[in-house]
Image 1 (tube, rainbow, N blue to C red):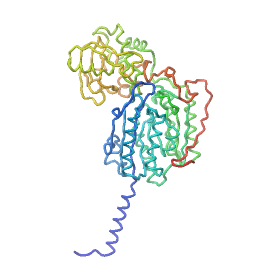
Image 2 (cartoon, one colour):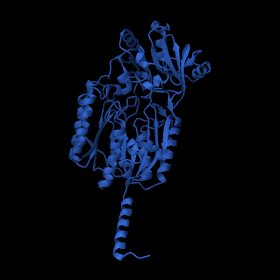
Image 3 (tube, one colour):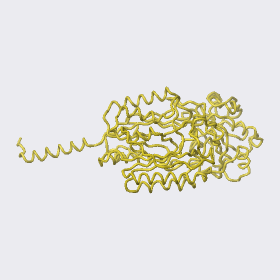
Image 4 (cartoon, rainbow, N blue to C red):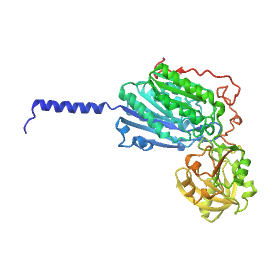
Length: 519
């Protein structure tokens, strides 16, 4: 075989080396995170089984922008470890937290070192014996990956940003919409901010401004569909377009945990100290200035008043939010107080009364009886109050089985039991009902029902679009919307609106030390 001329061989060698070097320059980025919203005012506990855990390559399925052929996927060498997500609930048991974090840390150790880490959390996790779980988690992560690794943290706007979390995050952002229609967009922003800083060689932003804002409000008062939340959050993106600013965020905080870190926060990151400070203080002052304008996203009334309005309305379906036990905010999901009150109402005693769909109440033993009886069979038994019986005991249901569905990923088995004119969805395990298909899969026709009652706060988009009319009922539970009834003992005071006459706070930006430094 004829040998290549030396100059051609050298050129080919240079190209091969350059190509190999280019491959080596791809940043090495890990992925990790735990996401749950957990109420300390609920007796419920969240366990390892509460989390939908993805590990390794399976994690990519959660992020459409990280599909195999996506641009972001090709920009780095990725090392996904563990990402767990749970329906909001009670405090996480210490065993569950320690085991999930432990697995994450062991997986991180397997592929050290990393240039970056995408830390995908919610920010409102409460854990037995810990006041700041996300701060504890990121500290443990730092002990493994070190401080050369850039960490980009993505959060829900109902999360909490402690000083520990702020210091150990190099980049940090959160959603800008409630309901969270921009969740994946926000996560992608966190990933791309990280990639941009690594590829450009700029590394950690030089400045992180953190401002605690002494406001604690439920999400149902801070929807970005209406003012003042809409206008407040509209101010965030323009700040990120200013020279020297990487990102900006406003956290509402999480109202149903009694911990010192629970309050609103503004953070801005960037390389221009003056601009970072100016943007942070502008957003914090904007929030404080509209504090008294926040109202519930829909009319609010007692349960009795809500039912009276619904029964008089000719708009179908009239949707009522059973807010106090909303499982998507951290409620146990099995408080029976509301359902007990419904069963007392004379309007629903007859089978031909106004149709009311109630979603839902856990009752695994009653579900088993319904499965045995079959559709059309008669069934009698108790449901609910297995976790949270503070407001009412188990509810007794005696009626006809109208539908059965097995194998739901959240509920397990679901049955519809008709009691009078009320169609009660009873589940093996608690489940939030957010989609029209959740009802139609059970042969229910929610658009034709007089009333649809769901354990929820503000309506998620699909239910919102379905409503004929809507009211939110002030019902009891672990996520009671009447915050003054909760009995806080440990949050920092004064706190608006619990202390309505409080003096204006100091909203001067506090510069947080860069991770791994004391300045």
